[in-house]
Image 1 (cartoon, helix red, strand yellow):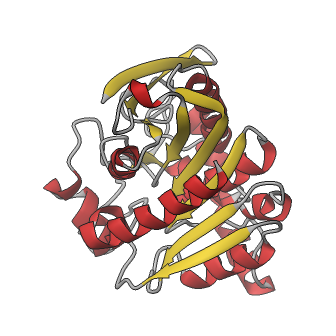
Image 2: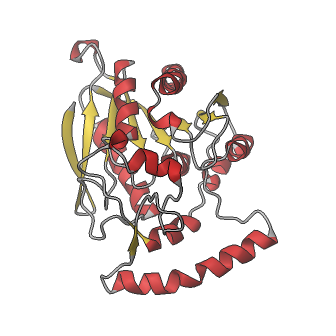
Image 3: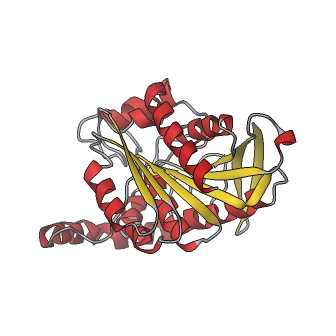
Length: 297
């Protein structure tokens, strides 16, 4: 593993590059860029998948998006969708310049929230020749009903106040995860805490904190637009059969809206987080992603 960095708009992005098994004597290989869960850093989920897929013969890059981990960013622990899309574009450019990477064979892998970003990104950046999403969120900015629209409208009343605090340099923050019932958290509930709040996902660069404005920013992000526009790129969806955080029915909706070549693979799960680090389930997901990328890159 090589620690690398590149600049995006004057801010530094830090990542881990994993070379493929077999080394440089194999010649230029396909490259994969990764984007992952909400608040996640490269030593966690994306690093697990990047390392495993490097073992399958790909050059893989897991990195910290700006504002998180070791990367730069003026507002720490703050979710900015456009920044993340720009980070992905810069990561592809950086990977294409590596001598061990074939610049015409670049794929993207998005896990959990990263699936939303990867889907939207790949729809507009034709350098991405294949896409795979795993346990993805598939954010849809359009409410499913008039009642849901009203609820969202009520919730968004706090948006202006949070924007003002960000502008003043004093953003309000909440915990990313909590095991205290009723306490505000970006990812509420016991299941996220059991992963992020325990040694199970330990990284010295992860912080249990997120700005309140982050949730509002995600409410306006439409990943499903990517599903509508990505007909030129083969897309693989890998999803768990039981997932209370990234619901299986949303994966099915995304699959239906995809144009072009597509495939969906279901893995028997009991929860969302299993596809982060359960060895047997990650093995299944990696096998599906590897086969898809080998077919299309």
